[in-house]
Length: 320
Image (cartoon, rainbow, N blue to C red):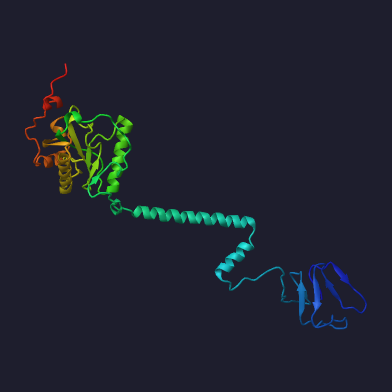
């Protein structure tokens, strides 16, 4: 009997003829080595360690090899299996798995985030209205911008000028408030003054305070000091393919504002309403809105203000 790769042999009288490698052990299970008198050794079972191939006589035989320091993992619960893998992984493998896990979590988070935001429609925003219709500067988070000038010389005012902002429409409070903040920032940056209108009517039908009562506007040259400027958000020029259309609610709220001005003494009960185009060279307030205000009770069809100054209309004598 021999084992492949033998490099040592022991031939002793009376001893069985057995050869083995330096790193192999052959142990007869039947209790004794075969003797030299036996022509063909009869070996039932052998326990072989540290050997990859065994050849007995003219035949190759199957060998059962017991490997030490190896655990067979089977029928483990998934959490236990994961913990087993982590515990028996090298540091480099653990770091690689951690990086892969972080990348996976990041990708899933981004996918969910963009999927949710892509499905959001501005119309779905919650319209948290702090007031039914009259929104103060504090409510729409206006920047502080105080001016010293007042309309006291001409109070109560006799002229109301209607304009449009030529800016995107807004159908919710949160959107209108954001639009006003953008508008105010633009005027402050490029003109160094506050939003030019005294009040703004949103497409949501609310009245937003601009400069407010008692402050001269910056919307109609020559008439700023003695008029109340009201602007409707949007572009109301009907000659455009896409244009804003004034609503009944907007008209109703504008008239409510004017009634409040009369009650509080800021407007003369016999005030006149004109479009900006009636006084200066402009297309404002746009044909759609202009046609609407011409139906108002206080609209001045005679246009007695045209080519006049505030002082003339109030009967003030020129200062010599």
